[in-house]
Image (cartoon, rainbow, N blue to C red; front, top):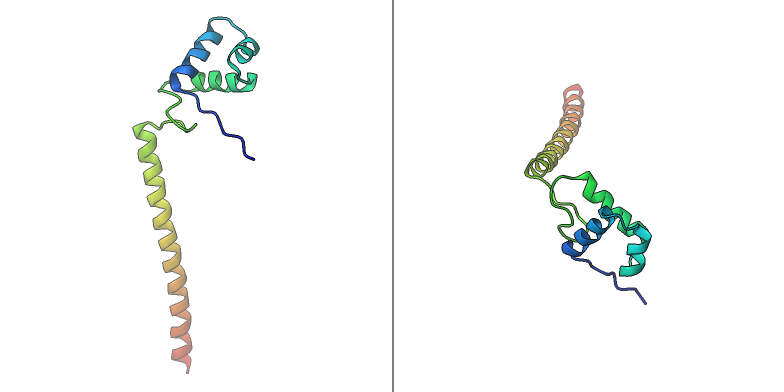
Length: 104
């Protein structure tokens, strides 16, 4: 029997973070709202790391436009690199067969 994973809204997470910043201990907040201390700590840490909106969905951090463009370019680069490697191997194979045909 699998346990259903709880989902918390961005507003709820931001409220928890504001309580921590207000001086309440993470353990107290965890007990009061049924959260683990480590989860509260993780949310606070995430809020301190980034300057853009956090908790945008399913635990995945939202990317800036620059980061999205970088990922897109990186993906295109890897595709071109793979094509280039395949072409190099093909040239090597055809070069070998040309040498064997010449010597016959």
